[in-house]
Length: 325
Image (cartoon, rainbow, N blue to C red):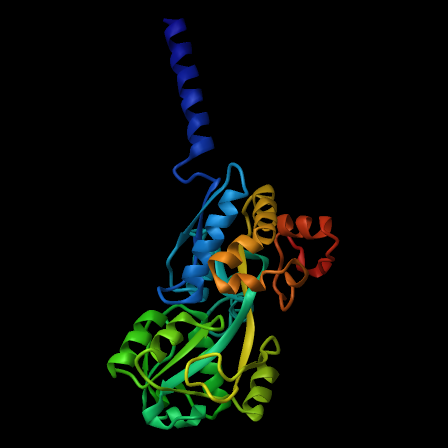
């Protein structure tokens, strides 16, 4: 009898150990939040996951479609997502409890910068729109629900003396907005995407576009409230029938993770991200911006200790104030 009980106890201990190592959610099987279909995050995130998986052992990343920046940060803060792409501007809002965040959400840490986020507003050329104020009264896709694009749009409109109530605002994914533009169901679409953006290129195949400029005065207003935005000029000819430079703004897209994610796992992911840059770039054009030397540019929220360890090994100094428990 004692032998039987001992055997049962041993079997139970072995099962408990197996469950602990595999778990209902394997600690080495991680989910990466990306963005909506038609957006840079969705395609780039998938390319990143594939390339990083090929250079890591014992860690698997699965890219998952999501509402992008805001949703990814909220899910990480709630412990329901492991890693995710987000705008550095949105990360600041989350940390401070401003913008789309009613309270401070600080259960996330930065891994590193991935690429330049470029704010791009396009309108049906028939509207004659050239500036943000010209969008008043029009049907405008202001950004996917749960994305940093909506927060950016609100700030851009504010700089122009407007609110989202001044347009017929719709929260479409970038892909859906492109389709609706081509079908004539909306007049304009706001996008935060890499350049050139596939969804905008798609629109140019069947319609003529007007590209909306952000003025110097509007830029000054934006930078006074959010200094991590800088001027971006999209050269003429980037898109079909774009005959003039587009004057807009840019910030950074970065990879973030849960604050409590294992240090060694984050070290391995950081190493894989920057050492797989060429492979990622071959799969998606935004990957060309992945650069170890600019990995912390524009990052003002805390950096994960695992990522910081990799940077220090590579001779990159991490601001001590950005490394917290």
